[in-house]
Amino acid sequence: MTVTFRTDVSTHKIKDYLLSRVDTDSPVEVEKVGRYLKHIEIYRRMERTIKKEGVSITVKNGSQTYVKSHPLLTEMNKVNTSIMNIERTFNFIDNDETNNKTYTANDLI
Image (cartoon, rainbow, N blue to C red; front, side, top):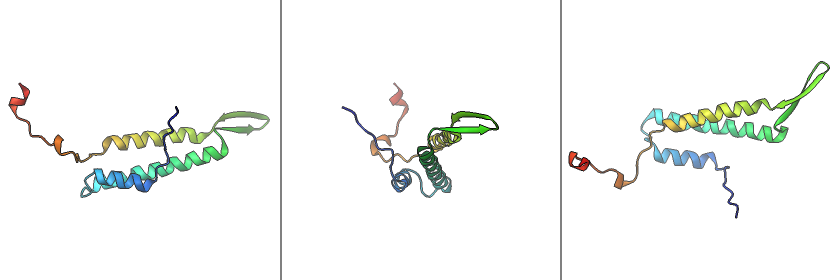
């Protein structure tokens, strides 16, 4: 049985999710959410372009003709790296009450 995962989640859902998990009083965290969403939009635009144009392009240089990978593939990797880097910097608020325990020195024994 093959399970298909949806990767076309709307940016509105992503925004709502992230803003519910970060401190919205922090302008830095809100800015990170905005940058994250812009990077996702850029990535998706490049993805659509590659889908339309194909993953390889034909380059003509004088009498030479050769096929190479689409230049946006490299750019997509760069944007994806930026997305992952932003994800690592989010300071998520822990909404789970059970994880807010106070520990003492006796817990180390």
